[in-house]
Length: 108
Image 1 (spheres, rainbow, N blue to C red):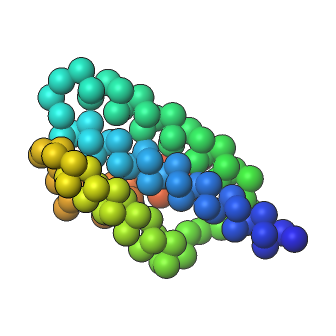
Image 2 (image 1 turned 90 degrees about the horizontal axis):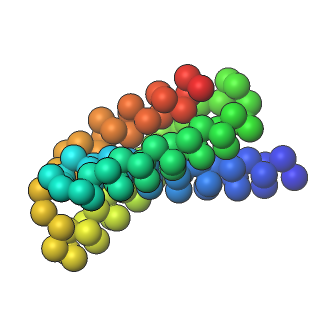
């Protein structure tokens, strides 16, 4: 039973982390009023991820396969945005943002 709950928590955390990172990268890509929206969305998703992360064991660390899954999910979402016509999206930032956000939720 605990394993099922842990999987559910991890799915929620990954979804919110990917959303936070996606919107942070989008905020960096735009130079208009959308920047505020993207930054706010990123902050909200990060706060939700932190709340769910706190429900896991304090010594839990994300395995490499979850980190890779997170990178793949974000890359896929950003590629969808690029196909829709979004400009200035830097896909090379994904890995550094993933590391940054994983550290943020680990330290809270």
